[in-house]
Amino acid sequence: MKNKTTLYLLVVIVLGIWGVIGYKLIVAFSGKGGEKNLQNELSSNQIVLSSIEKPSFSIATPERDPFLGGLYVKKRIKKKPTKGKLKIQLQWPDIVFKGLVSDKGAKKRVFLIDVNGESHFTEIGEMINTKLRLVNGDNQKVKIALEKEKKVFELKDNAFSY
Image 1 (cartoon, rainbow, N blue to C red):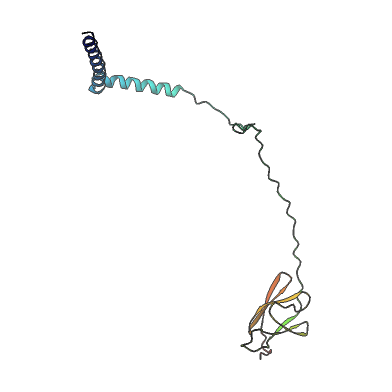
Image 2: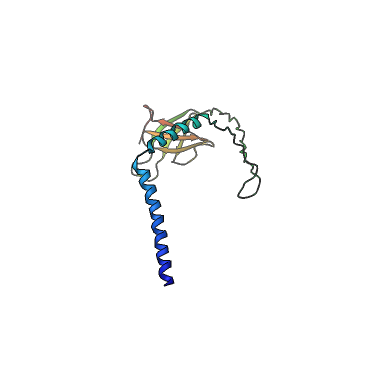
């Protein structure tokens, strides 16, 4: 008999709790008097919001790293001083491309080039004198390099080609 009385008592308590929850829901959604309270709350909030001043703050760099525990040191990048490179104008000798001397079907092409009045028979990649090197060429033009500077010389009208 004792178990039935506790059961009935618990059922009454549960129904009371659900009744209070239901009553609060009905009052919230019924609309009676809720609009006046809502308008009063909004107007009071507007007054309060206009009177609140925004705080000012400043951000400082941290002195130590919070995760690693060491001091926070910003790495400074040292700029290397740029040395003003002086471009030296290279003095090109008088070069005249006379033509292609080897056969058209030959694997090695031999070019006839005059440097300061001296004729030189050279192949591609070969040094003409101590500073000049034949880079590339065909039967109409050649490319010659003097140190790091390159120039293209075309076949002269009075030159010949075999």
